[in-house]
Image (cartoon, rainbow, N blue to C red; front, side):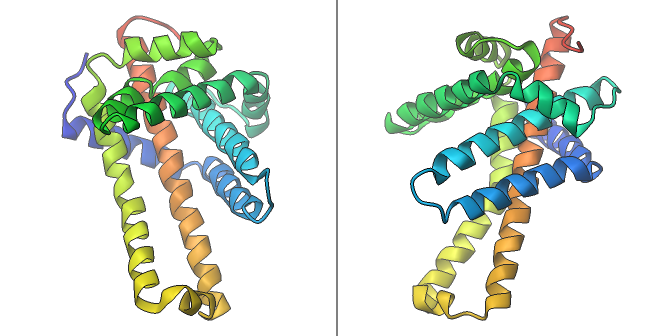
Length: 229
């Protein structure tokens, strides 16, 4: 198994980003996901569930596309969507289990949450590609991430940088001109800011999904498990 180093994380991220850059359909899926999630944010009560389902669908489609690319197969968006929808409830359960487990760990002085979240980080691609149950996917991820924690942490940390930069700029803007100033800002600039934010989040989340899938595939290949079917 390859050694977990910053260079290894960067190599995986670079390959994942290149995959997203050369696949406009995949990127378009994530732009649509986050655009609809943003619109759903104006709908009371159910917008959180709406966004949650969309994120799961987008992430699962990315896993199928990354797997096909790895094995030099072509897959249409319709085919990938059908495969994902057939297992949507289990996928929702996997993401929920990851969220709860990581959240509980973060309450215990942060570090346990980071560790648990990382160890369970491959549960989603495992569920998509192995069609396994929630518990089996979590167990599979725990097994596969042994010795890979550094690589996964590096991937997430590097991709978190642009999102942190956006958050800092938004905070500085809020402190500088206040909420009223932002609301009264010229509409075209507000729209441009929203579009840029959606685009950046789409690129980051698509790259994360592909990168985690690549780590999953590399690890299973190392173990001699064929997941190409």
